[in-house]
Length: 121
Image (cartoon, rainbow, N blue to C red; front, side, top):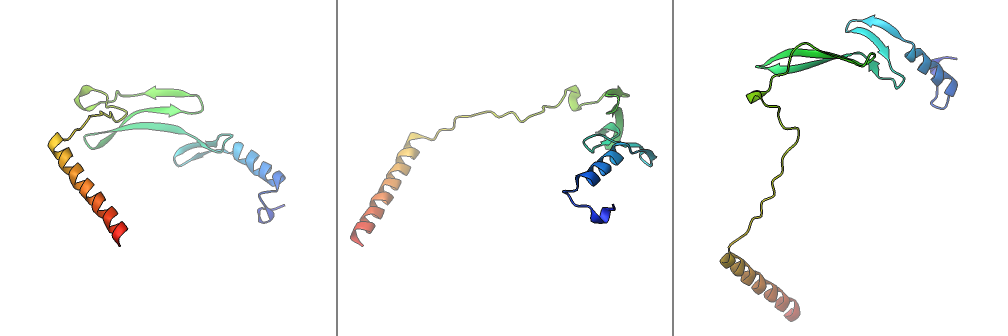
């Protein structure tokens, strides 16, 4: 069999490809390369923070050993951790009574005029 003859319904070839990817391990340019059973690359995840326009390495996360290694502490503007969500403040807005009456009167006149035009035309 060859990959030229591969179709998505060919379970035998798909299983061969799957097991080959699962057993693939080598040292690449970016470091050790391997794949998880879901097909994701297993690698060290570098944790960085931009401080004064420069990337500062804070640590690494190793997915294989589930190990988090910290080198430096993160620095936050003002020394406080930023909010992780937008705070929504509900504010009741009202309009003045004279403005409401004026707009209600103009709207009522417009509705009556529209009804009259429909009836008499």
